[in-house]
Length: 559
Image (cartoon, rainbow, N blue to C red; front, side, top):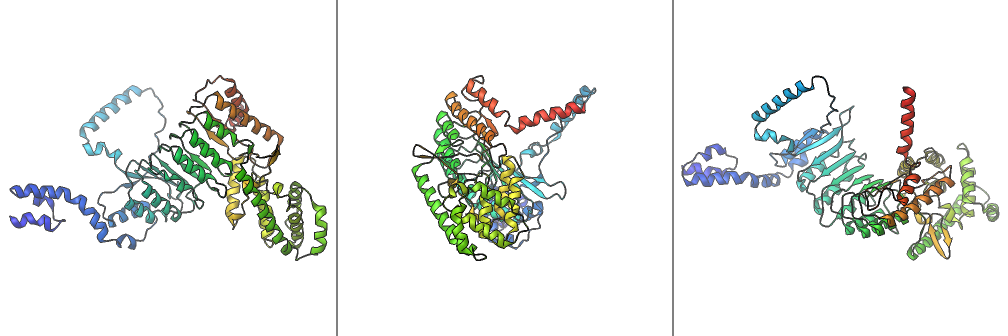
């Protein structure tokens, strides 16, 4: 009997049913040990065989790879990989609806009486839901909801996610992330396929609010959702600095969702500061926060011409001097094909505007020899080196300055700069233009050549320098905040300026400002004059409202 009681202690893998049937007090202690032992056994098993997960070669099938790696790491019960459930089709009532209801009620009552407690709650068991491509059934999106993702699970993901060549999105909802596990998660993102562009971390409040690490300069994330994370003004400050600072800025993030957080006026001001020099973000949601009039006025201010601070003016002058010195250092090398002295003598007479230079460069055919192009490059480079304010001022379009820089740097590659403007000129909407800019920036070998927004054309008034404002942001959502008519006046001035700006540039080559502005459910009457005027001005700009009459026309013509 004593030998049987000690067997469970000596061998943790001994069958427990035999040990539980022992007699006396020893059986109760053994029973308690048998119940507590599985939780303590899982950790040493993963530590005893750390090389097993490394030896496994992933096949690219997430279900197989995740199960095998979990088993090798010592997990006996782990989440299953299942397809994401589709919404049920809309219910269509029929003549026999009453009969179907009674049958369904009978089946439901019968199933409830037959099912066990475990099968009733199988819906709530942890799973990894995946969205599959319809053609080849490759994993496109991953959804993890409602169970804690630990460090070891992230280690398994770092092995089984990189082989997924078509992975586009990772969604983690209430998975108990910490600042440490977030750092581990960010480290595995570069290992994944280059198609991964969307990350959603909702319902994961962090003590240090280190979400800004997802927006680092080397980040490739284009769409980021951080809803319901208790982000306050401090977290908004970190996110605003990640959007842009005086010397750097994020150039890949296209949409940012900060809804259902605790951002107030100060936090909105930090986000507005990040928008001053950011020329990549197209879509921003600050819905369901605590923003009042002061924060709303700061957001509205950066979307129309705003005054540069003293620090920004100093940095702008430094950039102008640096760009001029770079052009002077490049000009001798560009004149090796022709008579450099004769061309330099002609340069003072070539002080034409940048618009004329852009037209000349657009008219040059692609079949011209590099020698002829080199001469034109030299002329434009020497003639505008003192007027780079206007030369670099086309950064909202992101087409003309890149073409000049590319032609000056790569003289031999004549066809590449000729192809880039065709991409920038084709689309008319700001959204498509920004996508084309992202594609162009991926083709450029040196990202340092991207023109700083501080080099945009400025306006001088009474000794102050004014920038044209952020015209790249297309969508701003401020629903359910605490904005009154005072904040509305600021947005009314912004919308009026952007509407006038877009009319003055009928053949606009760049972004023209907001296309959608959501201000409903705030602390003002929907019938107040500022809100009514904003809606009237935004109605012809909203692409959704433009599409509705077209749909009505097509339906009317078909009927």
